[in-house]
Amino acid sequence: MKLWGGRFTKETNQLVHNFNASISFDKKFYEEDIQGSIAHVTMLAKQGVLSEQDRDDIINGLQQIREEIRSGALIIDEEHEDIHSFVEAHLTERIGDAGKRLHTGRSRNDQVALDMKLYTRKEVSEMRDLLKELLESLYRIISENTDTIMPGFTHLQKAQPVTLAHHLGAYFEMFRRDRGRLKDIYERMNYCPLGSGALAGTTYPLDRELTASLLDFYGPTQNSMDSVSDRDYLIEFCSAMSMIMMHLSRFCEEIIIWNTNEYQFIEIDDAYSTGSSIMPQKKNPDIAELIRGKTGRVYGALTSLLTTMKGLPLAYNKDMQEDKELVFDAIDTTKGCIVLFRGMLDTMTFQKDRMRASAEGGFTNATDAADYLVNHGVPFRDAHGIIGRLVLYCIEKNVSLGELTLEEYQAISPVFQEDLYEAIRMETCVSKRNTIGAPGKEAMESVLASYKNYLEQS
Image 1 (cartoon, one colour):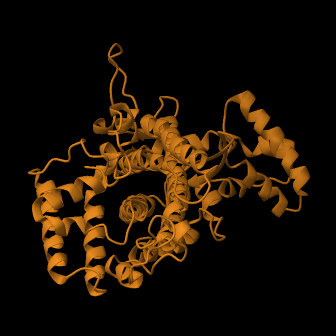
Image 2: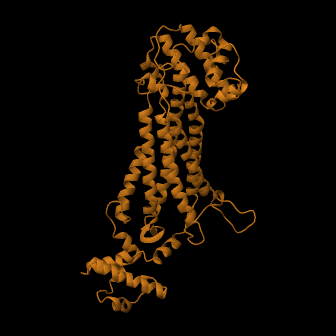
C-alpha cells in the first residue's frame, strides 16, 4: 500500500520502489510512529474532526498492532514503502474505513519529523544515562587512587608527577561536558512538529498544543516549513556523539600505550582482550583499538549529514531520508562503545608500583628541583639552567635526581642543602600542588566532593 498514487497511471518500477523505500531502516521506530498516531487521533477527536468511535477503533487497532510487532506475531515486511504505510495498511485491514481517517490533518513530512524526534529524544536520554554510568565507574577509580603517583606527560614525554586520580579526572571532565551537550540538545529539540502538514499547516482545526502535551514536548514548533525540514538536532546529536567518541578514542589510545610491555601501567582483563592466531604470547587490546577505529565511523555520519543538508532549499526534500541510516548507525556505535569501554575500565588492573617507578625515572621532579633553587634566592632562569645540567649529568650516569649525592649537587650549585631530597620526593611534588584543579590531595578531595554531588544531582 502506498499513501499516494491517485494521480499516477502506472505502477512504480520495482528498482525505483526499492531505491525510494525506507522501511528497511525506518521500521526501527514503529513504536514512535504508533505513539504519534495515537496522540494525533486523540487530538482530532477532541477537536471534533474524528468521532469518538473512530478514535477508539483506531487507538485499539494501533495498540493491537504494536503488541503484535513487539511479540513477533506481526512481522514488518518490506513490501510497503515505509513504516507509516505499513502501520496504516494493517490498521485499515483490521478496522475498515476508520483506518483511512488516521492520516487526516497530517502529512508524511510532519509524521516522519515527529517519529525521528521521538526516537532521537529517547536515544539522547539513554546515552546520557550510559555516560553517567561511565562517570560512576571513573569516580570509583579516582576516589581509590588519590595517592597513586604516575608520570604526567606532554608530547608523550614525561613531564611532572601527578596521580592516577588526577589523570583520570581529566576524562571525568570530558564526559561530564558530553552529558551537558546532550542535555542542551534535548532542550532545543523538544518541540513537536506534528500539525505542520507537508509544509504549510492544514485547514483542520488542530490543537497543536494538546498534541505536544500528549507526547511530552514543551510545545509545538513555531514554523511549519522549518518543522518538516529541520535536521539541526540530528547534526547536533552526531556532533555530540563525535565528541564522545573522540574522548573515548583518546582514552583508548592511552590504554593501548599503557598496556604495552614498555609501559606496563595496566593489565587489561582477559574478557576484554584477544590473542594472536600465530603468536601464542600475545594479548591484544582489541576492544580499545576497535573503539578508536569506530570513532571515524561516527565522524563519517556527521560529515555525511552536514553534506546532505548543505544545499537543500525549503522545505522537505527526499534527500533528508538519508538521515536515518546514518544517525541510527552512529547511535548504535556510540552506545555500544560506551558500554564496552566501561566494562573494560571496570575490570582493568592498575600497576601502581610500575607507575610510580616510571615517574621516578623520568626526571618528573626537575621542575620542583628548580623551584627549590628559586625558593633559595636563585633567579628562575638560572635555576632552569642548573637543573638542566644536572639532568644531563644524571643521563650520563644513568641515575635519577633522587639518587645523586649532596656533594654532586653542590658541585654544580652550593645552594643545594639536605632538605632538597624532601623537596623533590614524588609525594612532595604532588602534595604541594593544591591550587584548584591540581593533583594535590586537598585539591583532589574538593574535586571529588564536587563529582559526587554532580552524580547525585544529575
